[in-house]
Image (tube, rainbow, N blue to C red):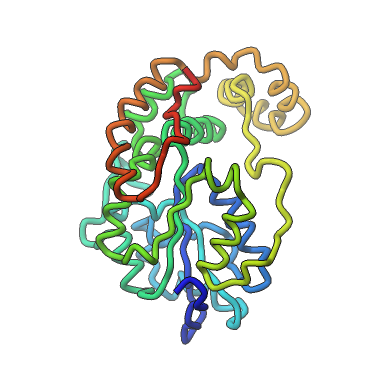
Length: 302
């Protein structure tokens, strides 16, 4: 199966999906696939069709419009980190809690029913460090007061899914109920992307039926540039003036002299995240068949 090219569908539609996890290197992987001469990929990377009740209500024709002008002789797919979940949530509900469209099946059921031959890739990163990265992402966007702290934001604003997207065992179990394990490839970020990118890319290309010998141009810098905590605070509390300057020289200067860095993540935040994720470790290793000793579950941050 590894070397078989995915069957060309009757119309342009995704043959593979990168389903997550958020803040785990999926943008890098997408860029590596986009460079391959055997692919023709849509813009944007994340369509979120199956991960949003509002978008799903637009219908299949709306979704497939993103693929209609792509090269029919090449492989296509998409990458939406909202898919590594169970139920289809509303993005714009008035509640502070996550609400679901209870009339719909789970996300893996929806996708596998429409695309029964599709293959899936999920990239998993140390869940504590992933949650910290997700929290800083939302703080950079100004989505909540930085003074609230990670634990309060994660527990009282669940629609950000800072905690939920790291519950890997739960969601892998959901996915594997609906698709065979040979159509879901699990990548460990620390071992396979950070340390062994070349071999990992060759394996993924091969898994998707692409030429595994192609060597893409790999970026020397991080795909997503993070902000320092001082810049995040300045952005949130200085208002519109701040937002017009933090992306320029002022913002870079604040990052260079990040005198508030120590206030970003507290010891109790890491201990809280460890209490959430460590109980899943043995189950995750069993389901994935992977040794996760490369994860310290944030111990190095303490």
